[in-house]
View 1 (tube, rainbow, N blue to C red):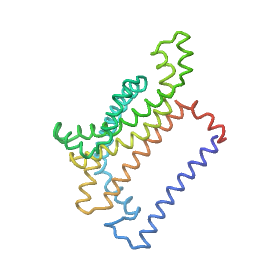
View 2: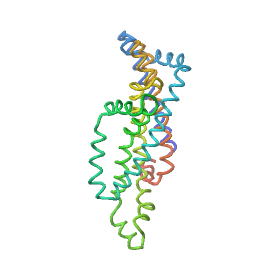
View 3: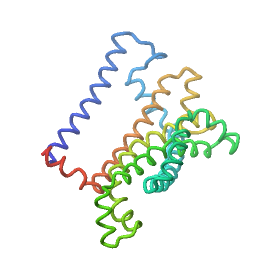
View 4: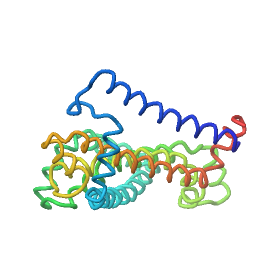
Length: 258
């Protein structure tokens, strides 16, 4: 098992290095202008040089993203649990949530700005509104796929609906829950950065917008690299927690891989 993990990580690292090498060679061979597509080496140099300036904006984006993400997870778990255990709630609330999720969030940001003004609040609310839907769907799906036979057995043994939900339903949703977390954190970054480009004077989104207006394309890509790095770091953290919490759900696959 450990050998398989190390080999997989090595292949992942090699693929990333190969991607950047191919990017660098393509720009050099084609003579691509920096205003169109800067070389990765230029982007990394810009990132190192501008990092002291970028650091407060990185913290701002990370803070608003995580606040919106945590609130979105809390809201998503509650709504997902209600929808998953109640057929009435599923039939009435689910279409409304689908409709709300279908609204482009770029159209919602001006409304948040109108209500709360520019700054961190619209970024938090945009991150929340864009990341809670995957949580709702996966929690509701996990609860809805609990075997009816298992519920019947537990009811026959005297278990209440709450006992079934707490001891069987919620634990069985953990693989779904962690899968949705890894998607939702990416959405949260998208929402926060989207709001920062419209309604904030701080954050990576604002830096990228300012750099774009000044035709500083390497700085724009440096911002993208920062966002990608933050997203990957949080993805890895959730993956590690998922492996420890839901190892029982992947044990069979691990044995096959071994």
